[in-house]
Length: 290
Ligand code: SF4
Image (cartoon, rainbow, N blue to C red; front, side, top):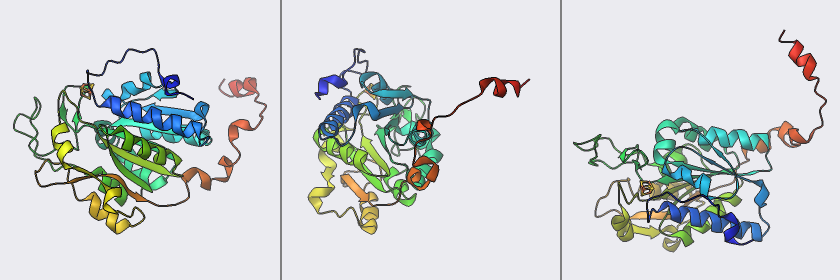
């Protein structure tokens, strides 16, 4: 297939130059690569989005999809995957979406290890509502709702995912679509919960591109071993989501391991329930409510 087949006719309303376009491109390229290698089927892909700038990707990606509600991308993905385990479920969410409203779902998704891929567009602000602080905003960030600067220590989602039992933990950069494509491909192929936190600078309300351009480096060029949990933990703590001049920001796969997927452990899901022919007496069911 060609990448153009994933285009839609919907007008792109992200701000001109928005780095969400890098995530959109990398996702399309990853899908094309995997479909052409016959690793996944296009008709089996389902995307799920939350609410935020990221969620417009639902309109721009020509696959089956579900535009869900704020903070509830992960339970929606779980329902779809358990309903039909043959589907390739890819979730898109924002940092406010995932790490504020959806934080409980995130912790349990890491524990459950359902075979699905979660992509977080982390721009460290609520961009759609003009740039308020989220749980990953750095200390000292000022906006209309925090004129004296945020005082809270940012949450480190890489550390949280590792501590919660995630089996694939990665960080990407929206401005490096080539590297990001390989991360998304590997996340989709991973048999379990794949989590990719993507640094996605919001050029309108929180332009962190100059910082990341200087401070980012790739883990695989640093001989990082993603099967080693202790080393992953050390690398995860290397950057605290604040913008100090002496911090380095690693991107790539921090940790990857095999553990049975949630849905693979339930006998009733081995033969998909929707393929079993059932004769339902709707009248009898309706009569039960009289
Ligand atoms: Fe992109 Fe920020 Fe504009 Fe949203 S507000 S479309 S994240 S640049």
